[in-house]
Amino acid sequence: MAVALHGVRCGLRVPMGRLGIIGGGVLAVCTAICAAEAGWDVHMLVREPSRSHQLRYVLDRHVTLHSTELPACDAVVDAASGHSDAPIRQALKAVRDGGTVLVQNAYAPRVVLSVPLRDVFRRSITLRGSFSYCRADGHDDFRDAIDVIAKGGDWVALMTRDRFPLGELPQGLAALNNEARHRPFKVLLTSDT
Image (cartoon, rainbow, N blue to C red; front, top):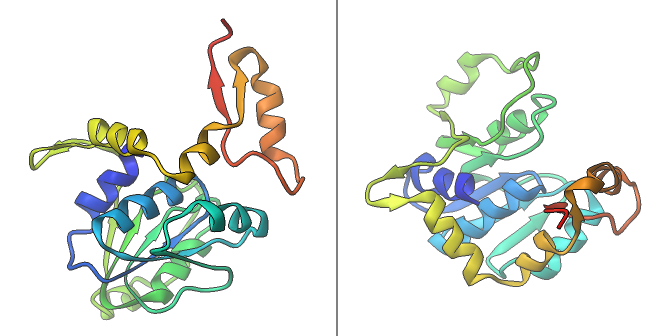
């Protein structure tokens, strides 16, 4: 949550408008929550049907889910897995000329951007990375993230219900990788005691 809050505060220093988010994982959801609370018109691209189904019931009404592509956006956050450059290419396609693309994932070491940089900068797009949290401008991202979680919403249960003792880490990981329709959204590890 702190990384998401930091990205919205420090990575999106542009006038609020339509924000696209690519990804359906925890970071993307946290970013959507923070951005909607800040006043953005949030649109999420979530390709996995089971993920989209779960999110439809827990996200704020100010978050619109899409399964194929985003509408034109003032800014787009790439919060996908980072295994290929497909999400950043989608972000560049969805952002308006002069807009901002914020990358909130750590791309795998061998992933290369297959879009000519000339095409990015010809459109005056700001490309920014943000995968951290800090204390800046009188805010403490980590402390404020705790407040967001404590304030809660329907999404909190989705992110905290599937708990495994630390000693059962292999079972927790297996549950995440299960192709079943109701696999956990996130696995929360607890102390063994």
